[in-house]
Length: 196
Image (cartoon, rainbow, N blue to C red; front, side, top):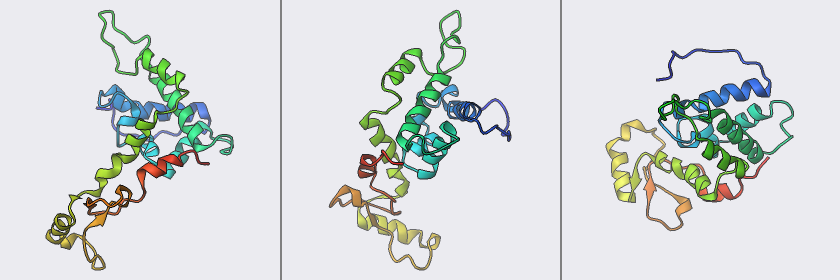
């Protein structure tokens, strides 16, 4: 699927080199036609950064600004990297003579749109990226049902765990539970997304 076997490559720590290699990797799902936008491919570092994983966001800041990391905040780094990826992934010049693209990529129209937005995602896109991890609760339902699943699989949990149901606190008075505690409130975490 990725054309070659997994391999390791030493990359110079300059922005051009790091960002070009990172964009190449983040564009793999686009070229493989698994997604139309790098943010949609859940198992990438870029998607993890958009979902709020701090180490992934810091990684992107290190890629786009490998020198002094205080030059731009995390939100600016994410926007700059998104512009870089879209620019690298543009399909311009790779169309076949019969019309279909020789290589899958991002259309010039989508790239222009992203540049007009200065690399920033719309609010609904941020919310969708953040709440995508909601299903990481593994088991979702009523308290009784989640506890029953927990009892059926009790041997998979440590002796300190007394019950299975964990209320999704960010859903305010909801009767929806999961088997795992989710680490953050995805909506209010977005409101504070402009962090250093």
